[in-house]
Structures are given as structure tokens and as C-alpha cells.
Length: 198
Image (cartoon, rainbow, N blue to C red; front, side, top):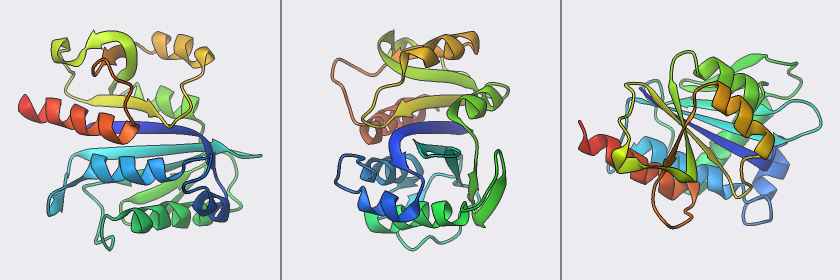
């Protein structure tokens, strides 16, 4: 199983503000683009992927929306508007939730009031963590674990204080090349690298 975590520090957890952030400074469209390229392939979708979107612009609790590709039903197409609406629906479902609560939104999609740090601690029990970093090991030189989990961010880089906690969890740094890429482009390269090794 492959897992991807996208930390969106600027993305609001209010569904209307989330939708209003498309094309604006919050760049919420990045989440839809990344989701599209993580789960879908031509005329189908991958059945071995879990995607966690962690939205952090909030006055109470971060919202972590989980998409499990093997459990997804028909979601009405993979275009940007449909995927942003799925995210907004999950955010609406999270209204009134208390800390670390979980709700099912629809088959294959859940929302949980859990922080990035707590989520990563849990995932580290079952996955080998990999974070993209320009000084990391070139991806073609990495021997990936059977259950890899890749950590990405939106347009706001990972805060420095997160690096120490990620290091304690055994996170490995990998490098996809000399250019800084969008998260949505990174996931395509990661998938391709893993697909080529099957």
C-alpha cells in the first residue's frame, strides 16, 4: 500500500472558505490536483493508494481528509471541480467535531480532527516515511520499503520545527531532481518510479 500525506498549512477548514480559496492566496486547488494525480490513471484509478489531506488554517482543530482508493465508489469524474467539491463536502461533515473525532463522509472518504504531527506518529507504525527534500537521496538510489508513505506540502514549506520530530520517526529524505515541483507533479514521478520497479 502506498500512502501520501499533503500538508496544506494555508487551506481553511471551513468549506465555503476552502472553495473561495481556489486560485487565491490559499491555493486550495493544489489539493484537487494532487488528489487527481495520486489516485487516478487513464480510464481507471489505482487500488493501492491512501491519500491524507491535512488542512491547517483553523481556529480549532486541523482536518485530515482521507481518501482510500480501494473503497471509493463512483465519485462523478476526476475533474478539479468535482474533487474540490468532495473535499468541501468532507469539511462540511466535520462541523462541530471535537478533537480526534472521525466521521465517514461517503465510501472511501473520511474526515478526522487530527493534527499532522499526530497523524504522522500513527502512520510511522505501519509505513516507512519519506519526505521530499532537495538535499535528500536521489529517488533512483532509494530502496523503498514495501509500505512507503510520502510527505508533501502545498506552496508553504514544512516548518523547521517539524524536521526533528520527523527525524525521530525515521523519516528518510528523498530528492526527485534539481527543479522545485508542485506536489501534484511529485506524486506522478513517485508513482512512476515505484511502478517501474514492480
